[in-house]
Length: 85
View 1 (cartoon, one colour):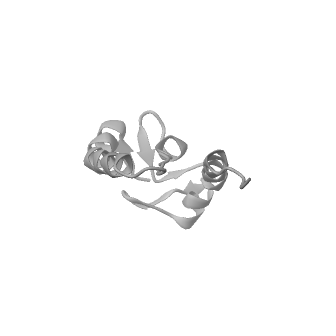
View 2 (tube, rainbow, N blue to C red):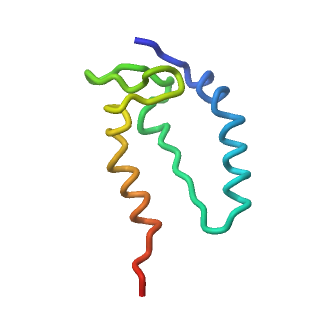
């Protein structure tokens, strides 16, 4: 069971998040979702909890780990999508 501390996670994601935010700001109608809180706790990200392997390696979710995000991702998309007139 491997755990990355919160500070390690912030350091690893910092440049990527900044670059992503710049790209999003440059295009109208683009949005993003940060699901880190859904898979990591305050102290960091652990590869295994609640009898489930969440991470295959420090940067990739397992399929079962990704499936746990389905409802949150769907809720986010539904909030963005507007019905056609």
